Image 1: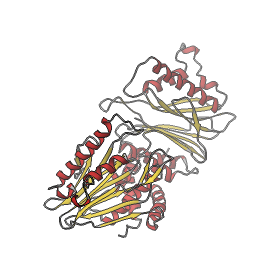
Image 2: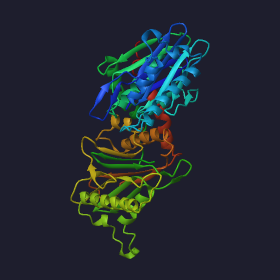
Image 3: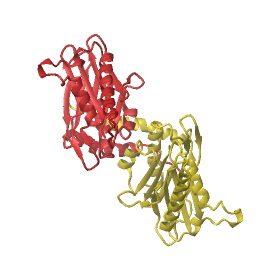
Image 4: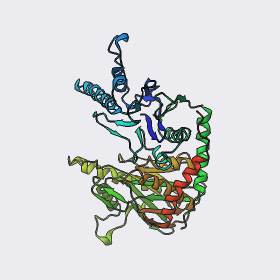
Length: 243
Length: 243
């Protein structure tokens, strides 16, 4: 399993993804699920993904044109004229990779499917955020649905729904995401730290801040422990039921 | 879908169940999912269930011996010598009902499966709480896992995990459950009010308090609105990320 979130704020985009992959509960590994393409001054594209790891790695490899000799590579995403075109490219590659495996008649215990979130900005357009389905179609985030979750999204959703605000600072949005991820890893063993994160500031055309939060990160610990207490206090502040 | 919780506290048991059933998203109804058998001074048994409505209704009908003429009925649960025997009865009936439908070769869009929580106390033993699987086996709640959720359990789980405490009063446990149910109905349309609840006080051998909370119940509204604000304040009380 996986848990990834892409979020649109007034000031830009925030992404967070976990790194746990599993083939059965007794076979877990750590893999990066966040991929970034950057041409400072022109574009930043961020792709986070959930689903079959072979599928998502194949998609990224094809997007980076690793089928060609290193000197001939010119990742196609770097040439996309708009975010919409970039989303279409990713979606097409994703569908092709899934089709290819399905048509061999092979079967996996899980399916070959994957779901992806693509966000970023290309000069000439606004920042945009897409959710790309394994069928090769996609939807875009808007004012009513300003964030997308993929993978094990249920445990961490209530806090996002209640506390999301488009005016959040990057630092406050990170706090919200850390709480959401912490709620998820407490309930599902197949989602796990470290977590990769990235901020993109509108019209900056460069990666704002990128990093990784480990399980023993002091900030992560502060939030994880502090949130338990804060939740209890929040509950205490409400009136008990009168029977 | 459904959301039900059975919870063991130091002072007794608390149950809450929603009432929404659906056959597709365009066909929703309201049905009671909580069934109570009481013999004051001797026993109280509470059964809440999730899954195929025809299955769960058939199980309850058989347990109440509705196959017999009204004057001959003597619900078998009323004769069970212990909670463990009662759980075995329910589990056997549940498995038989599911088998019966499966063996006709009929298929439903969903399966005929159901999962149940049985709790209560029979004179001579302590209060006990069981989770009964469609396969006809069951597990019992203990100190490490003092509550069971069935149905759409993920959205409402984080708050239960963080705020549950065995020393909670019934009134505080109700508040916790209302928050958990409210988080769930905000995210899944197939879980809905009204909610049935029941308190059972250890060694009372009678139903303590039983009732129903409707969507427009003033207490429900207070909690639902208050919780959003309390959560935001809880989040504000934690330090922002420092990038």
